[in-house]
Amino acid sequence: MSFEKAAKQKLRFTSADYNGTLNSEDLWDISLDSLDTMAQTLRTELKESSTKSFIRKANKKDATIKLRFDIVKRVIEVKLEAIETAEKSLETKQHNSMIREKIAAAKSKGLDNLSVKELEKLLK
Image 1 (spheres, rainbow, N blue to C red):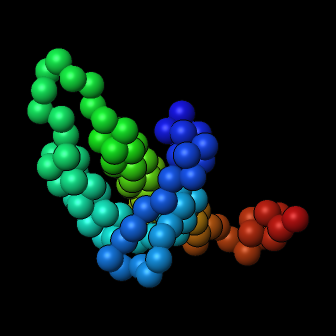
Image 2 (image 1 turned 180 degrees about the vertical axis):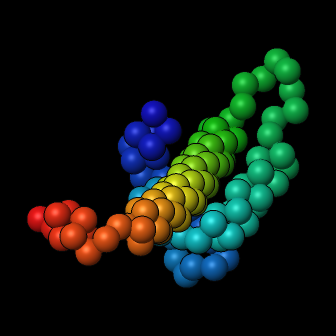
């Protein structure tokens, strides 16, 4: 829903690391460090501009800053999840590779005790 609002409002983001403005699609191409800095800046802006009243509604500027903040936060969450998934996948591949090597070594060790005739029978 947030990305839909961003698209409808033609929401733009600024970053100290990039010249010009960025749209929500551009956020996916930015480093996590840059996104973190952007989120910190937006959080500070949100705290400074937030309406302190309990009887008045937040103004449109506050809502826009909150939307920007929520979008940047979500992009960070998704990128971190992707990194975690990739790390788990790599660990699984390394683990399975090690197990396959052990299996091959165990099979090879079992063949060491066979005679030539027995080995020839195993040929396919």
